[in-house]
Length: 158
Image (tube, rainbow, N blue to C red; front, side, top):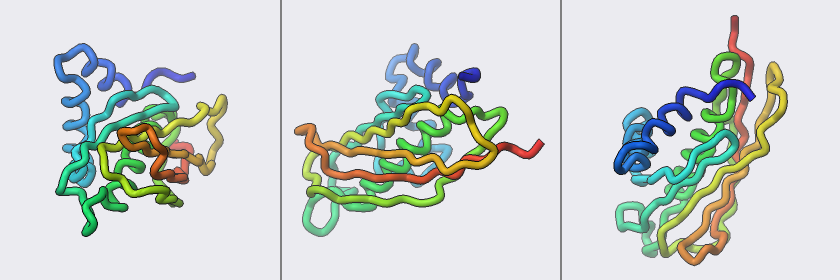
């Protein structure tokens, strides 16, 4: 594997600080403000893995008092994007989301925990679609939402 991405280096530095996960999460939301709407807490980030928690609060509820579908999509895209950014070799490749297929399996009436995880490819192609599965669980550890996010990964122009 290539050297750690700059995102992973920042994550690692934050881990040595008090409230490092919170600080890292705030920095991510500053860089990409839309994610701030769900107030995520990134709990783990490695090459091939990212997890986050989103608290159940009224600001992300729908009309029936459960977590809104788009808030679920938002945390899925956040975890997938952070994980891909931490995984793709930044010196040689870049990425962008291309599409997302979601399944709402149950209403979410608790906090939610999202996990994006892939097997890290041993080789990165010139162009490829990278399918990133994301699973979202409620506080009872029940699977309540899934997303398959297609990331378009290409080699950087030299």
